[in-house]
Length: 119
Image 1: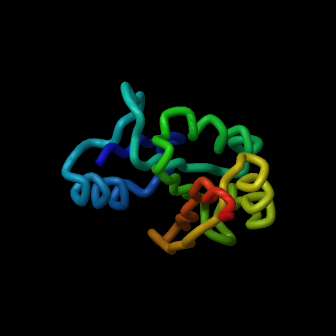
Image 2 (image 1 turned 90 degrees about the vertical axis):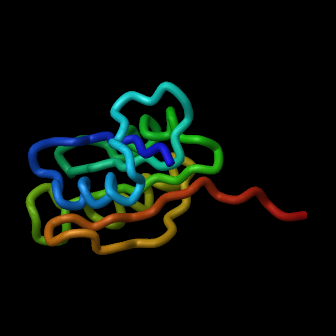
């Protein structure tokens, strides 16, 4: 499984990163040479418009892949409002899926490409 990490900075949860690398038995990719299965995107309110970040994160994502958007938890510095996340996902052409609490300071939201309409 190829996992690309975007938005890394000194404030990310190192233990979570290491746990992910243990599960996939590989390092996280920073620059993909081919389509990746998962994009792990660390995003803070100060990073700017979440739509721009999500659209950029889709660049190397395979058509069947998904994105985990990690944002600071409520009450933490650079917290991102859930409304902004929902609107950003919709504008970027993504659907919100499973939320998860992943560490003491970070929460995660799984985003997927919506399934095609059924006939």
